[in-house]
Image (cartoon, rainbow, N blue to C red; front, side, top):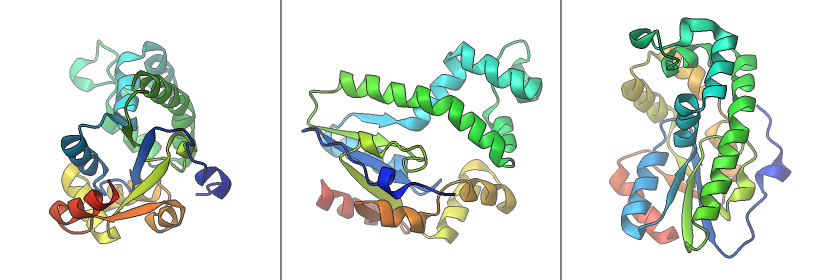
Length: 210
């Protein structure tokens, strides 16, 4: 996966501190974000939340996805509705790069717009946190004044992902390899939080940066 270094190094230059948190899947991004929220009472904007919002509440998006993949991705427990089964959708996009790119091209403009709306809403906050798993891949670094990478070892990433989502190793592999490698993200980030071990060991690193 190629990412433009010039785009990846773009940063927000305004007075508001915007901490962009990124990392690989299951690296601990959400946990670190929640910790910052608890100690600093800082607004948290989450790309995954905006994505889920689009897949559940945006009828145009849902219709577009269902028209492409058929009813195999509709929640089987509620077949009369248009509730998208995220697990079924994931099985498609993580096995086919072209389908993943198609879905990202559909969702990323909506996610970007939601970030812009929420940033405007919180423009008087001195600090705000943006949790964006595909921060570099989606070219969203321009929204952030600084980028923190939540890092963990590849073995730890596999273990956490398989346990969290009930995946086998092959399923986890497809998801991990769909993102830019953590080692590549390290080069493009401003700060690294090592979250390989217990979360409690990561919090002091966060405190130093705050």
